Length: 175
Length: 229
Image 1 (cartoon, chains in turn cyan, red):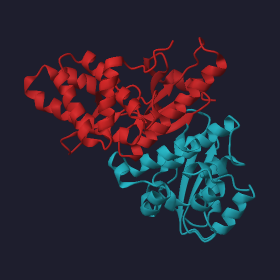
Image 2 (cartoon, helix red, strand yellow):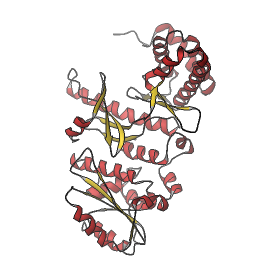
Image 3 (tube, chains in turn green, orange):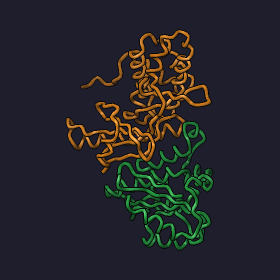
Image 4 (cartoon, helix red, strand yellow):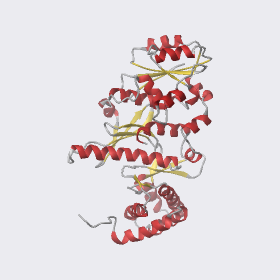
């Protein structure tokens, strides 16, 4: 159900993504994440086009952590921040983090290769139904995404929405 | 810091004076890595500053073009410390240079070349209307990719390493002048074809008349405006 990718630039780091529907304890999960008791990023899946988008955010977060240039306090908050097209931190959490009433959540964790136990431990803390990560496409809100990232119809002529989103995420610090 | 192992696994494609190009897999996708290596012949502070600025300008221009609907490679990741840009690999493409060279000899394909020249003119007009100056327009820095189920192929601009933003007709004129020089020297006997390109540029751009006028001026004096130094 979950997908795990290796970060080629940081080979001892893997990124695992898990998608849940019908989640009943979003408020509790969010609280634990804020207190640092949950080692994962909790992302609102309506703002995600594809798992590649999360991967780009995670790779950048690990890179900035290793070079000591993170803009936020932790690796997981940095992943959420990196998804946003703007440099406003609270705005990023509002749009890409989860809210207490949400019933769907994408769980992202960064771990080493021999920490696969972590994945199942984390999954157990979510009171909801785990679904394949590919189901993202049915949860995402294309109109909202295009509006937030300011993707125009003419840009869609030369590439996909995912291309446009990834480009903005990768270059936002110099815009 | 990026893992040195990563570059060992990557395939070196090209090495220029400014950067090295590698082909590698990044986040599971075929990727081109452009690494601006340190230049020991420059003062370290100046080197860092120039390299950083060029990296920034390159990604800015790419995004600006894409926003306007001009195809350019997707930027996946930028490492401002090692000055590496991770770009989408345009799979299954060929350069316009190779296309023209292989098509030129076939007389029946004349119409196709004219069509391509007109298409290039339109794209460049659109780019200049966005005030993006490419800085290194050559037929090697334009790629053609076949689009499935559409007869026409897509034109993709690459290598924005010398690009910058400017609204001056002078800068746009020089941009076209650089292309003219490169075009006519790589592809002999294409004066008529290039004329078609310029005509289509003039017809597509809103502010082309000032640019073409400048181009005529630049032709007489060369690329550099001031003759100092």
